[in-house]
Length: 370
Image 1 (cartoon, one colour):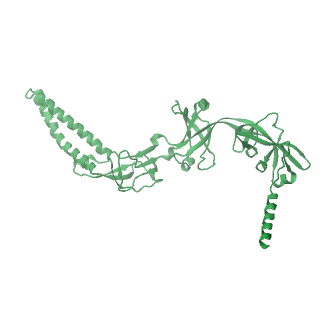
Image 2: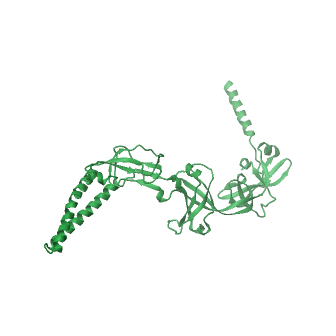
Image 3: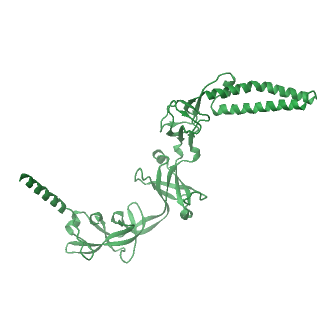
């Protein structure tokens, strides 16, 4: 008996809670009716269409990016094993700063070859000059002279090539000629910026095709948007841009068109449009972030309702139009409307015979009746 009493009490409580919700009456005429008490308890509001300013925009998508000259991928000219690296993703580095050291006996082989050529070149040069003098005096044959010249020029080319290779490895050729060899090379930052990719672990072999790390100069971040061919003639330098980063937040950021592409190259027939970013945004945003943007072409005035007053169904828009108010009851009709521009808080309504400036529309509490 006690269990049955508890069960009955719980059922009664559940029913009483259900009764507190707004009850909607929909007669055969399709009207949605609520009592005045329900209207007030749900804090519903009715208003006429209001005039607002709307931006006429072109939609685009893209990403936060940097120009190619401000993005550097660090790769070895000749592969080696990582000897040391003390940086992490997010660390700032300065141009010329040592990023990683690599070790490989192949570096020693290049230095040995360079020294061997360097020692030969003086002899070959003097022999070439001697053969040239003898040839001019018709003491030696042209064959000997040309061979001496060929040997010298070939050795000189190898010497210059190996010297440039040492410089690319950040090895000082002068030290090598003095017999100071090294099996360790350093890779330096070609630009200042932040480390965005780090693939190096101590002991790992990095080949010339491997990206050890990537450095991006975030001071040059910009907006890189793709605009379809059909809209590109509307885009001009200096136009304002509003954009969001949907994966990160709903905050609206601002930019301006900096440059418009001059050719259609993408498969989707779109053109790149670049936008400038304010310094404070560059500190907050990250390279590669996906963005959705609206490029503002102009502004116009139009009749509107709050966004919350719009009911979306199957790509169609409806509002709840007040038809009558009598006997302490409000009666609404779900009415199809044509919408125009949409701002952060309002939606433009294209006026017609059903919905016009004097129409009374439910603008708050729509969710409770839909």
